[in-house]
Length: 335
Image 1 (cartoon, rainbow, N blue to C red):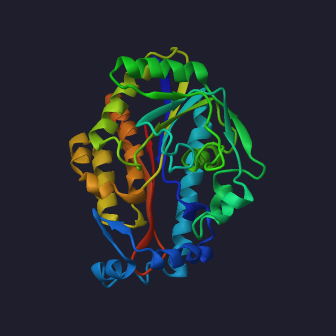
Image 2: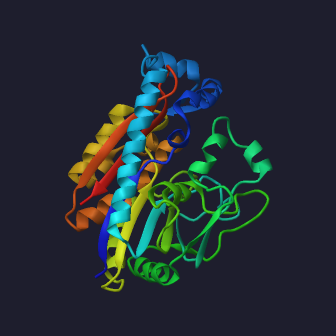
């Protein structure tokens, strides 16, 4: 079988590429947002602040932001080092799309990108103007100035598709990213962040695997995300024996309402390889951008099959308001 020489998972939120003194750019939008998701319930900012009294004013101070931003950068540097030293021949990247590329015309539950090239294209000025407050500043965190084109891995992608279909997963296949005035033309930020920050814009040929964790009505349930991870074990086993493979999951943790208790519950279960505990987390807790945690689930199942356990490099709750909005940032590796 092919050898998995690197297995990593990390968050990819805008705060990772935004100076901490500028996190307030997004905080204002938080206070105006009438639909914050928190443990399966949706509420406005005032209700969220009351729910979480006495709040997180000290946690959102500039000093804490600076400390936590620095911790995140150290964790990312460590992940980049581990990836670099693994010398992978090919990478499989697990992530999602937030209506950036796949829109109302077609959104599959699972999509394997099998194109020979993977474009990372900067947004147009008009697209940047349409971004939510505090997001544009982080664009260079997942797309280099002027863009980039990374190598795809068509043969590997098609082999994975054949094995996944044989294992009962009717996955979609894309050989080119759809274009159009209503969408981004390059790879979405969940993948772009990995190419930029972890692979340092010098990736090996790679296969993006999209899981539609966020857009109803065809979002895979947690147990299905675990099942596809087990199917990936057999799919990777069918690859050429001399192939050195990296598998990287992108997304999470709780955001844009930080829930440290929930994050720790899930991270502890991942550390124990406890799939029953992971599947027991209510689906309603994965509303909003917290849904991205499910992009880690296939990797956990795959690593369980190989008898590997998660090493938590760091978990950093990054607060930006007194109501606890922000992003829980997690960084992990499997040995």
